[in-house]
Length: 505
Picture: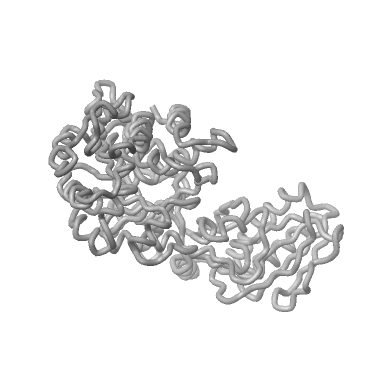
Protein backbone atom coordinates (compact mmCIF):
# COMPACT_ATOMS: atom_id res chain seq x y z
CA UNK A 1 0.00 0.00 0.00
CA UNK A 2 1.04 3.56 -0.57
CA UNK A 3 0.45 6.37 1.93
CA UNK A 4 -1.88 9.21 0.92
CA UNK A 5 -1.27 12.48 2.75
CA UNK A 6 -3.80 15.31 2.86
CA UNK A 7 -2.92 18.98 2.62
CA UNK A 8 -2.92 19.66 6.36
CA UNK A 9 -0.74 16.63 7.09
CA UNK A 10 1.64 17.58 4.28
CA UNK A 11 2.02 21.05 5.78
CA UNK A 12 2.92 19.40 9.09
CA UNK A 13 5.49 17.22 7.31
CA UNK A 14 6.99 20.29 5.66
CA UNK A 15 7.10 22.16 8.96
CA UNK A 16 8.80 19.25 10.72
CA UNK A 17 11.29 18.88 7.88
CA UNK A 18 12.19 22.57 8.06
CA UNK A 19 13.77 21.91 11.45
CA UNK A 20 16.28 19.53 9.85
CA UNK A 21 16.45 20.34 6.13
CA UNK A 22 17.00 23.59 4.25
CA UNK A 23 13.90 24.39 2.16
CA UNK A 24 16.20 25.22 -0.73
CA UNK A 25 17.50 21.66 -0.65
CA UNK A 26 13.97 20.26 -0.87
CA UNK A 27 13.16 22.62 -3.75
CA UNK A 28 16.28 21.43 -5.59
CA UNK A 29 15.30 17.80 -5.09
CA UNK A 30 11.72 18.39 -6.20
CA UNK A 31 12.71 20.36 -9.29
CA UNK A 32 15.34 17.82 -10.24
CA UNK A 33 12.84 14.96 -9.97
CA UNK A 34 10.32 16.85 -12.11
CA UNK A 35 13.00 17.69 -14.67
CA UNK A 36 13.94 14.02 -14.96
CA UNK A 37 10.30 13.20 -15.67
CA UNK A 38 10.19 15.99 -18.28
CA UNK A 39 13.22 14.53 -20.06
CA UNK A 40 11.58 11.10 -20.12
CA UNK A 41 8.38 12.61 -21.46
CA UNK A 42 10.20 14.45 -24.28
CA UNK A 43 12.70 11.69 -25.02
CA UNK A 44 15.63 14.00 -24.27
CA UNK A 45 16.38 17.69 -23.82
CA UNK A 46 18.64 18.96 -26.58
CA UNK A 47 16.82 21.34 -28.89
CA UNK A 48 13.46 20.88 -27.18
CA UNK A 49 11.31 23.95 -26.56
CA UNK A 50 9.77 24.12 -23.11
CA UNK A 51 7.48 26.64 -21.42
CA UNK A 52 7.40 26.61 -17.61
CA UNK A 53 4.43 28.37 -16.00
CA UNK A 54 5.76 29.24 -12.55
CA UNK A 55 3.87 30.69 -9.61
CA UNK A 56 5.08 32.74 -6.64
CA UNK A 57 5.43 30.00 -4.02
CA UNK A 58 7.40 26.80 -3.56
CA UNK A 59 5.62 25.20 -6.52
CA UNK A 60 6.90 27.99 -8.74
CA UNK A 61 10.37 27.62 -7.21
CA UNK A 62 10.27 23.92 -8.14
CA UNK A 63 9.37 24.95 -11.68
CA UNK A 64 12.32 27.32 -11.93
CA UNK A 65 14.64 24.49 -10.92
CA UNK A 66 13.05 22.41 -13.69
CA UNK A 67 13.83 25.21 -16.14
CA UNK A 68 17.46 25.37 -14.98
CA UNK A 69 17.96 21.61 -15.23
CA UNK A 70 16.42 21.43 -18.71
CA UNK A 71 18.57 24.30 -19.97
CA UNK A 72 21.62 22.36 -18.83
CA UNK A 73 20.43 19.51 -21.04
CA UNK A 74 20.19 21.73 -24.10
CA UNK A 75 16.52 22.69 -24.01
CA UNK A 76 15.29 26.18 -24.86
CA UNK A 77 13.17 27.17 -21.89
CA UNK A 78 10.85 30.10 -21.35
CA UNK A 79 9.61 30.81 -17.82
CA UNK A 80 6.21 32.50 -17.62
CA UNK A 81 4.92 34.13 -14.43
CA UNK A 82 1.60 32.44 -13.56
CA UNK A 83 0.22 35.75 -12.25
CA UNK A 84 0.65 37.42 -15.64
CA UNK A 85 0.51 34.45 -17.97
CA UNK A 86 -0.61 35.04 -21.56
CA UNK A 87 -3.83 33.48 -22.86
CA UNK A 88 -1.77 30.90 -24.74
CA UNK A 89 1.72 29.45 -24.43
CA UNK A 90 2.15 29.92 -28.16
CA UNK A 91 0.95 28.78 -31.58
CA UNK A 92 1.07 25.15 -32.73
CA UNK A 93 4.62 23.99 -33.39
CA UNK A 94 6.18 26.55 -31.04
CA UNK A 95 6.58 24.36 -27.94
CA UNK A 96 7.37 20.71 -27.17
CA UNK A 97 6.40 20.61 -23.48
CA UNK A 98 4.54 22.76 -20.97
CA UNK A 99 5.45 22.47 -17.29
CA UNK A 100 2.63 23.49 -14.95
CA UNK A 101 4.28 24.81 -11.78
CA UNK A 102 1.83 27.62 -11.09
CA UNK A 103 0.23 26.56 -7.82
CA UNK A 104 0.46 23.52 -5.55
CA UNK A 105 -1.81 21.51 -3.28
CA UNK A 106 -2.49 24.37 -0.89
CA UNK A 107 -3.88 26.77 -3.51
CA UNK A 108 -7.29 28.25 -2.81
CA UNK A 109 -9.23 30.22 -5.36
CA UNK A 110 -9.72 29.86 -9.09
CA UNK A 111 -6.95 29.38 -11.65
CA UNK A 112 -7.26 29.86 -15.39
CA UNK A 113 -4.39 28.23 -17.21
CA UNK A 114 -2.99 29.45 -20.54
CA UNK A 115 -4.14 27.46 -23.56
CA UNK A 116 -1.83 24.75 -24.85
CA UNK A 117 -1.77 23.66 -28.51
CA UNK A 118 -3.28 20.25 -29.24
CA UNK A 119 -0.80 17.41 -28.96
CA UNK A 120 1.65 19.25 -26.69
CA UNK A 121 2.30 17.23 -23.51
CA UNK A 122 1.87 18.82 -20.09
CA UNK A 123 3.83 17.95 -16.96
CA UNK A 124 2.27 19.06 -13.65
CA UNK A 125 4.46 19.70 -10.62
CA UNK A 126 2.93 18.14 -7.47
CA UNK A 127 -0.68 18.60 -8.67
CA UNK A 128 -2.37 20.27 -11.67
CA UNK A 129 -2.75 23.95 -10.74
CA UNK A 130 -6.30 24.79 -9.71
CA UNK A 131 -7.07 21.28 -8.41
CA UNK A 132 -7.94 21.05 -4.72
CA UNK A 133 -5.30 18.91 -3.04
CA UNK A 134 -7.85 17.19 -0.79
CA UNK A 135 -11.07 16.90 -2.79
CA UNK A 136 -9.79 16.84 -6.37
CA UNK A 137 -12.30 19.54 -7.33
CA UNK A 138 -11.23 21.68 -10.31
CA UNK A 139 -11.41 25.40 -9.58
CA UNK A 140 -11.34 27.45 -12.79
CA UNK A 141 -9.71 26.00 -15.89
CA UNK A 142 -6.77 23.77 -14.91
CA UNK A 143 -4.55 22.14 -17.50
CA UNK A 144 -4.98 18.41 -18.04
CA UNK A 145 -1.56 16.87 -17.45
CA UNK A 146 -0.10 13.87 -19.19
CA UNK A 147 2.15 13.25 -16.18
CA UNK A 148 2.05 14.63 -12.64
CA UNK A 149 5.15 14.36 -10.48
CA UNK A 150 4.03 14.61 -6.87
CA UNK A 151 6.38 14.63 -3.91
CA UNK A 152 6.77 12.35 -0.89
CA UNK A 153 3.31 10.72 -1.10
CA UNK A 154 0.05 10.60 -3.00
CA UNK A 155 -2.42 13.40 -2.32
CA UNK A 156 -6.18 12.75 -2.04
CA UNK A 157 -6.89 15.24 -4.84
CA UNK A 158 -4.96 13.05 -7.29
CA UNK A 159 -7.26 10.11 -6.57
CA UNK A 160 -10.73 11.61 -6.68
CA UNK A 161 -12.87 14.30 -8.25
CA UNK A 162 -11.67 15.94 -11.45
CA UNK A 163 -8.10 15.66 -10.17
CA UNK A 164 -7.94 11.97 -10.98
CA UNK A 165 -8.43 12.62 -14.70
CA UNK A 166 -6.53 15.91 -14.85
CA UNK A 167 -3.42 14.41 -13.23
CA UNK A 168 -2.74 11.86 -15.96
CA UNK A 169 -0.10 9.33 -14.94
CA UNK A 170 1.14 10.06 -11.43
CA UNK A 171 4.75 9.55 -10.37
CA UNK A 172 5.62 9.87 -6.68
CA UNK A 173 9.12 11.26 -6.18
CA UNK A 174 11.02 10.67 -2.94
CA UNK A 175 12.67 13.96 -1.94
CA UNK A 176 13.57 12.96 1.60
CA UNK A 177 10.36 13.97 3.38
CA UNK A 178 9.09 11.36 5.88
CA UNK A 179 5.52 11.35 4.53
CA UNK A 180 4.80 7.68 5.06
CA UNK A 181 2.49 5.80 7.36
CA UNK A 182 2.63 6.69 11.03
CA UNK A 183 2.58 4.07 13.75
CA UNK A 184 0.29 4.59 16.74
CA UNK A 185 1.69 6.36 19.76
CA UNK A 186 3.76 4.08 21.96
CA UNK A 187 3.90 1.30 19.38
CA UNK A 188 7.20 -0.56 19.50
CA UNK A 189 8.83 -2.40 16.62
CA UNK A 190 10.07 -5.90 17.40
CA UNK A 191 13.74 -6.67 16.81
CA UNK A 192 14.51 -7.20 13.16
CA UNK A 193 11.18 -5.89 11.92
CA UNK A 194 11.35 -3.63 8.88
CA UNK A 195 8.60 -1.64 7.21
CA UNK A 196 8.36 -2.00 3.43
CA UNK A 197 10.37 0.45 1.36
CA UNK A 198 8.86 3.91 1.39
CA UNK A 199 7.03 3.52 4.68
CA UNK A 200 8.38 6.34 6.83
CA UNK A 201 7.66 6.91 10.49
CA UNK A 202 5.93 10.16 11.35
CA UNK A 203 4.95 11.98 14.47
CA UNK A 204 1.28 11.80 15.45
CA UNK A 205 0.61 15.25 14.01
CA UNK A 206 1.54 14.18 10.49
CA UNK A 207 0.76 10.46 10.34
CA UNK A 208 -0.91 9.32 7.14
CA UNK A 209 -4.30 7.78 7.84
CA UNK A 210 -5.17 7.02 4.21
CA UNK A 211 -3.71 4.21 2.13
CA UNK A 212 -3.90 3.45 -1.59
CA UNK A 213 -4.43 -0.24 -2.30
CA UNK A 214 -2.13 -1.91 -4.84
CA UNK A 215 -2.01 -5.27 -6.60
CA UNK A 216 0.54 -6.83 -4.25
CA UNK A 217 -1.71 -6.15 -1.26
CA UNK A 218 -3.85 -9.16 -2.18
CA UNK A 219 -1.21 -11.14 -0.26
CA UNK A 220 -2.69 -9.62 2.90
CA UNK A 221 -5.70 -11.93 2.52
CA UNK A 222 -4.79 -15.17 4.32
CA UNK A 223 -4.44 -18.20 2.07
CA UNK A 224 -5.64 -21.68 2.93
CA UNK A 225 -3.27 -23.73 5.04
CA UNK A 226 -2.25 -27.28 4.24
CA UNK A 227 -4.92 -28.75 6.52
CA UNK A 228 -7.72 -26.33 5.68
CA UNK A 229 -11.32 -27.50 5.38
CA UNK A 230 -14.35 -25.87 3.79
CA UNK A 231 -15.88 -24.49 6.97
CA UNK A 232 -12.79 -22.44 7.78
CA UNK A 233 -13.74 -20.03 4.98
CA UNK A 234 -17.51 -20.51 4.81
CA UNK A 235 -19.84 -17.67 3.83
CA UNK A 236 -23.53 -17.34 4.60
CA UNK A 237 -25.61 -15.38 2.09
CA UNK A 238 -29.12 -14.15 2.83
CA UNK A 239 -30.37 -12.80 -0.47
CA UNK A 240 -33.05 -13.10 -3.10
CA UNK A 241 -36.81 -13.24 -2.83
CA UNK A 242 -39.58 -15.03 -4.72
CA UNK A 243 -38.99 -14.42 -8.42
CA UNK A 244 -35.76 -12.50 -7.74
CA UNK A 245 -32.94 -14.98 -7.26
CA UNK A 246 -30.48 -13.69 -9.90
CA UNK A 247 -28.70 -11.31 -7.52
CA UNK A 248 -28.34 -14.09 -4.96
CA UNK A 249 -26.79 -16.40 -7.57
CA UNK A 250 -24.25 -13.74 -8.58
CA UNK A 251 -23.28 -13.13 -4.96
CA UNK A 252 -22.83 -16.85 -4.30
CA UNK A 253 -20.72 -17.41 -7.42
CA UNK A 254 -18.51 -14.44 -6.54
CA UNK A 255 -17.93 -15.72 -3.00
CA UNK A 256 -16.81 -19.10 -4.29
CA UNK A 257 -14.58 -17.63 -6.99
CA UNK A 258 -12.94 -15.34 -4.39
CA UNK A 259 -11.94 -18.29 -2.24
CA UNK A 260 -14.86 -19.27 0.00
CA UNK A 261 -14.76 -22.96 0.89
CA UNK A 262 -18.51 -23.23 1.45
CA UNK A 263 -21.43 -20.94 0.70
CA UNK A 264 -24.79 -21.38 2.39
CA UNK A 265 -27.63 -19.47 0.74
CA UNK A 266 -30.94 -18.66 2.39
CA UNK A 267 -33.74 -17.11 0.31
CA UNK A 268 -36.66 -15.77 2.38
CA UNK A 269 -40.06 -16.95 1.19
CA UNK A 270 -38.71 -18.91 -1.76
CA UNK A 271 -40.31 -21.96 -3.30
CA UNK A 272 -37.73 -24.75 -2.75
CA UNK A 273 -38.22 -25.79 -6.37
CA UNK A 274 -37.10 -22.37 -7.56
CA UNK A 275 -33.91 -21.96 -5.56
CA UNK A 276 -30.83 -21.04 -7.63
CA UNK A 277 -28.99 -24.04 -8.99
CA UNK A 278 -25.24 -24.12 -8.41
CA UNK A 279 -22.54 -24.85 -5.88
CA UNK A 280 -24.25 -23.24 -2.90
CA UNK A 281 -26.10 -25.21 -0.26
CA UNK A 282 -29.39 -23.37 -0.77
CA UNK A 283 -32.45 -23.40 1.44
CA UNK A 284 -35.78 -21.63 1.53
CA UNK A 285 -36.17 -19.49 4.64
CA UNK A 286 -39.65 -18.77 6.03
CA UNK A 287 -41.56 -16.00 4.33
CA UNK A 288 -42.00 -14.16 7.62
CA UNK A 289 -39.87 -14.08 10.75
CA UNK A 290 -36.93 -15.59 8.90
CA UNK A 291 -34.06 -13.95 10.80
CA UNK A 292 -33.90 -16.73 13.41
CA UNK A 293 -33.51 -19.38 10.71
CA UNK A 294 -30.89 -17.23 8.98
CA UNK A 295 -28.88 -16.89 12.19
CA UNK A 296 -28.97 -20.66 12.63
CA UNK A 297 -27.86 -21.17 9.01
CA UNK A 298 -24.88 -18.86 9.57
CA UNK A 299 -23.66 -20.49 12.80
CA UNK A 300 -20.72 -22.41 11.26
CA UNK A 301 -19.84 -19.68 8.77
CA UNK A 302 -17.11 -17.04 9.06
CA UNK A 303 -18.89 -14.15 7.31
CA UNK A 304 -22.42 -13.14 6.34
CA UNK A 305 -23.65 -11.23 3.28
CA UNK A 306 -27.15 -9.84 3.35
CA UNK A 307 -29.22 -7.82 0.90
CA UNK A 308 -28.86 -8.57 -2.84
CA UNK A 309 -32.31 -9.09 -4.34
CA UNK A 310 -33.90 -9.32 -0.91
CA UNK A 311 -36.76 -7.03 -1.83
CA UNK A 312 -38.59 -4.48 0.27
CA UNK A 313 -41.73 -6.31 1.29
CA UNK A 314 -43.33 -5.50 4.66
CA UNK A 315 -41.43 -7.15 7.47
CA UNK A 316 -38.10 -7.37 5.62
CA UNK A 317 -36.61 -4.38 7.44
CA UNK A 318 -37.24 -5.83 10.91
CA UNK A 319 -35.64 -9.15 9.95
CA UNK A 320 -32.59 -7.48 8.42
CA UNK A 321 -32.09 -5.31 11.48
CA UNK A 322 -32.23 -8.29 13.82
CA UNK A 323 -29.82 -10.28 11.67
CA UNK A 324 -27.26 -7.46 11.49
CA UNK A 325 -27.50 -6.79 15.22
CA UNK A 326 -27.27 -10.39 16.40
CA UNK A 327 -24.91 -12.12 13.96
CA UNK A 328 -21.66 -13.17 15.65
CA UNK A 329 -19.59 -12.94 12.47
CA UNK A 330 -18.57 -10.10 10.10
CA UNK A 331 -21.58 -8.83 8.13
CA UNK A 332 -21.61 -7.31 4.64
CA UNK A 333 -24.74 -5.16 4.21
CA UNK A 334 -25.69 -4.40 0.61
CA UNK A 335 -28.57 -3.34 -1.65
CA UNK A 336 -32.03 -3.86 -0.10
CA UNK A 337 -30.50 -4.46 3.32
CA UNK A 338 -29.12 -0.92 3.25
CA UNK A 339 -32.64 0.36 2.67
CA UNK A 340 -33.79 -1.71 5.62
CA UNK A 341 -31.27 -0.03 7.92
CA UNK A 342 -32.77 3.38 7.16
CA UNK A 343 -31.03 6.68 7.80
CA UNK A 344 -27.81 7.28 9.70
CA UNK A 345 -29.36 7.35 13.16
CA UNK A 346 -31.43 4.21 12.52
CA UNK A 347 -28.42 2.35 11.17
CA UNK A 348 -26.33 3.34 14.18
CA UNK A 349 -28.98 1.96 16.52
CA UNK A 350 -28.66 -1.42 14.77
CA UNK A 351 -24.90 -1.49 14.38
CA UNK A 352 -24.34 -0.55 18.01
CA UNK A 353 -20.91 -1.64 19.20
CA UNK A 354 -20.38 -4.00 16.27
CA UNK A 355 -18.84 -1.26 14.08
CA UNK A 356 -15.65 -2.93 12.92
CA UNK A 357 -17.52 -6.14 12.08
CA UNK A 358 -20.23 -4.57 9.89
CA UNK A 359 -19.55 -3.05 6.47
CA UNK A 360 -22.10 -0.98 4.60
CA UNK A 361 -21.57 -0.92 0.81
CA UNK A 362 -23.56 1.99 -0.66
CA UNK A 363 -23.26 3.46 -4.12
CA UNK A 364 -23.77 7.20 -4.43
CA UNK A 365 -27.57 7.00 -4.55
CA UNK A 366 -27.75 4.77 -1.48
CA UNK A 367 -25.38 7.05 0.42
CA UNK A 368 -27.52 10.08 -0.45
CA UNK A 369 -30.62 8.28 0.82
CA UNK A 370 -28.95 7.29 4.09
CA UNK A 371 -27.04 10.50 4.78
CA UNK A 372 -29.36 13.01 3.16
CA UNK A 373 -26.48 14.48 1.11
CA UNK A 374 -24.61 13.57 -2.05
CA UNK A 375 -21.01 12.38 -1.95
CA UNK A 376 -19.63 15.11 -4.24
CA UNK A 377 -15.96 15.22 -5.25
CA UNK A 378 -14.58 14.27 -1.85
CA UNK A 379 -15.45 10.59 -1.63
CA UNK A 380 -12.96 10.05 1.18
CA UNK A 381 -14.72 12.62 3.35
CA UNK A 382 -18.16 11.26 2.43
CA UNK A 383 -17.18 7.72 3.42
CA UNK A 384 -15.63 8.99 6.65
CA UNK A 385 -18.75 10.95 7.53
CA UNK A 386 -21.10 8.01 6.97
CA UNK A 387 -18.79 5.68 8.87
CA UNK A 388 -18.57 8.07 11.80
CA UNK A 389 -22.33 8.56 11.82
CA UNK A 390 -23.34 4.91 11.62
CA UNK A 391 -20.45 3.44 13.58
CA UNK A 392 -19.88 0.89 10.79
CA UNK A 393 -17.19 0.37 8.20
CA UNK A 394 -18.35 2.04 4.97
CA UNK A 395 -17.37 1.12 1.42
CA UNK A 396 -18.47 3.91 -0.93
CA UNK A 397 -18.55 2.39 -4.42
CA UNK A 398 -17.37 4.25 -7.50
CA UNK A 399 -14.50 4.86 -9.89
CA UNK A 400 -12.68 5.85 -6.72
CA UNK A 401 -13.82 3.52 -3.96
CA UNK A 402 -13.20 4.67 -0.39
CA UNK A 403 -13.42 2.31 2.60
CA UNK A 404 -13.65 4.22 5.88
CA UNK A 405 -13.57 2.93 9.46
CA UNK A 406 -15.05 4.62 12.54
CA UNK A 407 -11.65 4.59 14.27
CA UNK A 408 -8.13 4.11 12.88
CA UNK A 409 -7.08 0.49 13.04
CA UNK A 410 -3.80 -1.35 12.86
CA UNK A 411 -3.26 -2.68 9.37
CA UNK A 412 -1.72 -6.13 9.76
CA UNK A 413 -0.24 -8.59 7.32
CA UNK A 414 0.80 -10.45 5.37
CA UNK A 415 -0.34 -13.65 7.07
CA UNK A 416 0.25 -17.11 5.68
CA UNK A 417 -3.00 -18.54 7.02
CA UNK A 418 -5.99 -17.51 9.12
CA UNK A 419 -4.15 -18.80 12.18
CA UNK A 420 -0.80 -17.17 11.44
CA UNK A 421 0.45 -14.29 13.54
CA UNK A 422 0.19 -11.14 11.42
CA UNK A 423 3.00 -8.66 11.28
CA UNK A 424 2.18 -5.21 12.64
CA UNK A 425 1.79 -2.38 10.20
CA UNK A 426 0.54 1.19 9.97
CA UNK A 427 -2.70 2.60 11.31
CA UNK A 428 -5.26 3.79 8.77
CA UNK A 429 -8.86 4.93 8.73
CA UNK A 430 -9.43 5.04 4.95
CA UNK A 431 -8.37 2.59 2.25
CA UNK A 432 -8.73 3.74 -1.35
CA UNK A 433 -9.02 1.70 -4.55
CA UNK A 434 -8.88 3.31 -7.98
CA UNK A 435 -9.39 0.28 -10.22
CA UNK A 436 -13.04 1.15 -10.82
CA UNK A 437 -13.89 1.12 -14.52
CA UNK A 438 -16.97 2.03 -16.59
CA UNK A 439 -17.15 -1.66 -17.59
CA UNK A 440 -18.58 -2.30 -14.12
CA UNK A 441 -21.46 0.10 -14.70
CA UNK A 442 -23.87 -2.75 -15.39
CA UNK A 443 -26.57 -4.48 -13.37
CA UNK A 444 -25.42 -7.04 -10.81
CA UNK A 445 -21.77 -6.08 -10.37
CA UNK A 446 -22.51 -4.77 -6.88
CA UNK A 447 -23.88 -8.19 -5.93
CA UNK A 448 -20.62 -9.70 -7.15
CA UNK A 449 -18.60 -7.28 -5.03
CA UNK A 450 -20.54 -8.12 -1.87
CA UNK A 451 -19.87 -11.83 -2.39
CA UNK A 452 -16.15 -11.16 -2.84
CA UNK A 453 -16.00 -9.09 0.35
CA UNK A 454 -17.71 -11.92 2.21
CA UNK A 455 -15.17 -14.42 0.90
CA UNK A 456 -12.15 -12.32 1.85
CA UNK A 457 -13.58 -11.74 5.33
CA UNK A 458 -14.30 -15.45 5.74
CA UNK A 459 -10.71 -16.21 4.77
CA UNK A 460 -9.57 -14.11 7.73
CA UNK A 461 -8.93 -10.59 6.42
CA UNK A 462 -10.06 -7.77 8.75
CA UNK A 463 -13.34 -6.45 7.36
CA UNK A 464 -12.06 -3.02 6.19
CA UNK A 465 -9.18 -4.71 4.39
CA UNK A 466 -11.46 -7.39 2.95
CA UNK A 467 -13.71 -4.67 1.55
CA UNK A 468 -10.94 -2.57 0.02
CA UNK A 469 -9.09 -5.51 -1.52
CA UNK A 470 -12.31 -6.95 -2.91
CA UNK A 471 -13.06 -3.60 -4.57
CA UNK A 472 -9.54 -3.54 -6.01
CA UNK A 473 -9.75 -7.08 -7.39
CA UNK A 474 -13.29 -6.39 -8.66
CA UNK A 475 -11.89 -3.62 -10.85
CA UNK A 476 -8.87 -5.62 -11.97
CA UNK A 477 -11.14 -8.48 -12.95
CA UNK A 478 -13.27 -6.19 -15.10
CA UNK A 479 -10.14 -5.00 -16.91
CA UNK A 480 -9.64 -8.58 -18.11
CA UNK A 481 -13.11 -8.71 -19.63
CA UNK A 482 -14.83 -7.31 -22.67
CA UNK A 483 -14.50 -3.59 -23.30
CA UNK A 484 -18.12 -3.57 -24.48
CA UNK A 485 -20.69 -6.06 -23.27
CA UNK A 486 -19.17 -7.16 -19.96
CA UNK A 487 -21.94 -8.54 -17.75
CA UNK A 488 -21.92 -9.18 -14.02
CA UNK A 489 -21.82 -12.95 -14.51
CA UNK A 490 -18.43 -12.63 -16.23
CA UNK A 491 -16.75 -10.95 -13.27
CA UNK A 492 -16.48 -13.83 -10.74
CA UNK A 493 -14.48 -16.03 -13.12
CA UNK A 494 -12.32 -13.12 -14.17
CA UNK A 495 -11.68 -12.39 -10.49
CA UNK A 496 -10.68 -16.01 -9.92
CA UNK A 497 -8.28 -15.77 -12.86
CA UNK A 498 -6.71 -12.54 -11.57
CA UNK A 499 -6.41 -13.87 -8.02
CA UNK A 500 -4.86 -17.10 -9.25
CA UNK A 501 -2.17 -15.11 -11.02
CA UNK A 502 -1.46 -12.74 -8.13
CA UNK A 503 -2.24 -14.56 -4.90
CA UNK A 504 0.63 -15.24 -2.53
CA UNK A 505 1.01 -18.96 -1.91
